[in-house]
Each structure stands twice: as structure tokens, then as C-alpha cells.
Image (cartoon, rainbow over all chains, first blue to last red; front, side, top):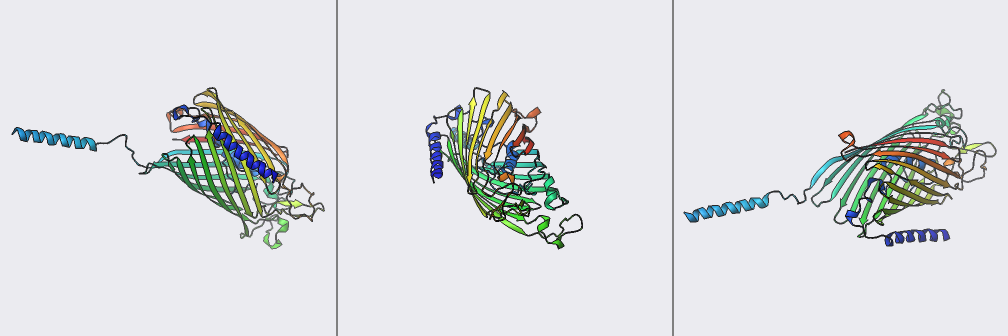
Length: 74
Length: 401
């Protein structure tokens, strides 16, 4: 129960901190933010790395990759 | 006569004016049919070695090679309401070899030690840039000799007024696991004379379902920093083990691994990307994971792309991962026959791993050598686990526009 409360508190605190700490950024100020290497998603070249990690390790998810489907039998 | 002339001139001017209005307004929105905008090709070669095979009950070679190739075609168009429509069609083909597959037969004589996996996918999204919303639907299919999977997903995103974006994606996977048991658990009549290789074509199968709700929130914090928070809520039901994974008990007898038929997973991740100076980017990621089988894990990674020129970058990276074992794991010959659930699959054991490597990326504005090849990325990584599993992966991504 304590762990769940801590988990939810961390989640709420993270979203609040992210929202409150931001400054107003205009479109013309986003040259760095819009750089392709600043993308917040995993890059295509990492796709198969994420696959093998999800099969060789017990944890998966919360990385934009798959959470199910596929065997990883070997 | 003058009146007539003035009338004609007046009519001419009116017509001219009218046609002037009818001529193309270059600023007006023009809908556009779907057009092929981007083609992506990703190829990877993966190789691993270890000595804790799940087929051998926690002992034996884990040697695997895998050659994966994926092709993705993306069409983009705008409808009459100025909404951007994107259709993405993907096709993947993997070929693997696995030394441990030979030991599905107790004598190590199973002939099938390689396999092919095909996995097509289809995604459609509609984005309304004025409202800051998007909606997408997707379907996925994967087929290999002993496993079939059908996946469906739907998602929405909504931008906030302050450079943020909320996302929700619901996914469901419906899998069928073919029941290929170790040779000692198969009826003797099902085997030919070739070293215990099973020949009858009609294996039974067992279902497995995975339902996921993925929540995300991303935020531009300032002109150099942005972050995203990711939360997946995952429920799995059905046959969650694999029928050819053995377990050896303390008394020397063996059985097929037996795991609960439900699993609830809760991973939460945080990404933080920072543009430092004019050339260096820091890409950080952390994930905490917990599930109701007793596994907890932490993942932390850092990638540092360095822009040697605006269009050429080198990216070294390091990833650290650590997990506790599930309640049902024990090594070779350490399970008791009185245990309800048991597995000797080392992916569910307690271990740590490190993954490091580097990549480079070239993406000149006019294409590489002036061709349609708009970006090229090559990446290599070396992976080690404290279970002694070692692997290497090299990936190539080509993007055509």
C-alpha cells in the first residue's frame, strides 16, 4: 500500500513539476527542441535493440516499444 | 457611341476583375491526396551466447543469431478540413538460429534449429493541427512456426496551450502459443526414427492475451530542455510460460515450466532531453518497473549525440539495468516437486546488465550525395548480463524521402 502511494505521489509530483517549471517557448525559439536528435521517442534504429531487451529481461514497457505480442522463444 | 464604348470597357473591367478574383489564391488551403513521403529500412544482426538455456532447465547453450529486416512506407495527405492523414504500412522479416532448439528433443537431435518470423503492420493517423489533436488506429500481425500474434491499437493525443501534450493509447494482443513439448513429454507414437524428431503436423495451441493502456505526457520546459513521462498499465492472461521450457527438480526429475495464468505489470518511465551548447545533446531515460510476480527493475540510460557538423553526429550510449527475480524462479535442480509454480528461465532471475556502444547519423538537407537517401544511421551495441549472457547487435537505418 505504501509503495502504491509513493508511486502515485511520484507520478503526480513529476507531472506537476514538469508543468510548473516550464517557461513560455515561442515557435521561433524551438530550433534546438525541434532537432531530430531531441525527439522524445525511441529512434527507428533502436527498434530491434528494444525487442531483444524485452525478451532477455523480465521488465518491459514505458519506452514507447511493444508490451506484448511476439514470442522471444529463443 | 461613347456610351457603348464606355459600357464595353466597363464590362471588360468587370470581367477582368471577376477573373482576377477567380484566379488561384496561393494562400488558400488545398487538400492533397495521399502521397508517398517516406520510406524507412531498418536491418539488424544480433548474436548472443550464454549457458543458462531455459530449454535445458537453466543449463546449456543460449547461442542465438537473428537477422531482422523491416521496411516501412509512409503516405501523407491533407483532407478538405486541413487535417493531416498519415498511412504507414510496415513489413518485417526475421531469420533466427538457436542452438538450444535442438534440445527440445532430450537427445539434442531436434532438426529444427532455425526459424522465420513475418510481421506486417498497418497504421493510420489523423492530425488536426489547428485543434492540436490527433487520433490513430493500428493493426499488427506476427507469425512464426510456434507462435502467432494479432495486435490492435487506438490512440489519441491532445496538445496543451503551454507546449505540452497528453497521449493515451490502448493496445490488445491476441496470441496463440503452439504446444511443442520436450520430447520426453510427448506420446511415443508422435516421433519418427530421426533422433526423436516429432513429425505430426497438428500441434495444439494455447491462447495468451495482453491488454495495455499507455499514458504519456510530454512538455517543452525551456528552449533547450524537454521531458516526457510514460506510464503503461499491462494485464496479461492465458498461457504465460513456454511449453518447451524445462524445469529440473531437486530429485532429478523434470517437468515443463509452470507459471500463473495472469500477470499485471506497471512500468513508469521518464525521458529528459537537453541541448547543451550548440553541438551536444544529452538524452536521459529512467524506468521503474514492478509486477505481481515479484519482479522489480530499474533501468537508466544516457546517450550523448555530438554534432560534428549540423548534419553529422556521433552518439555514444550506456544503459544500466537491474532486476529482482520472480517468486517462481530457481536454478537447475533447485525447485521442489511440491512447488505450485516453477521456472528456470534466467530472463526471470535476479541479475544486472550493461549495454554500451555508439552510433553515427548523417542527414544532409539535400540528401546523401544529392539522392533520395535523406538519412543514414548505423549503431552498434555490446550487452552483458551477470548471468554470463553476452550479446552484440548492429543496426542500420536508411531513410528515403
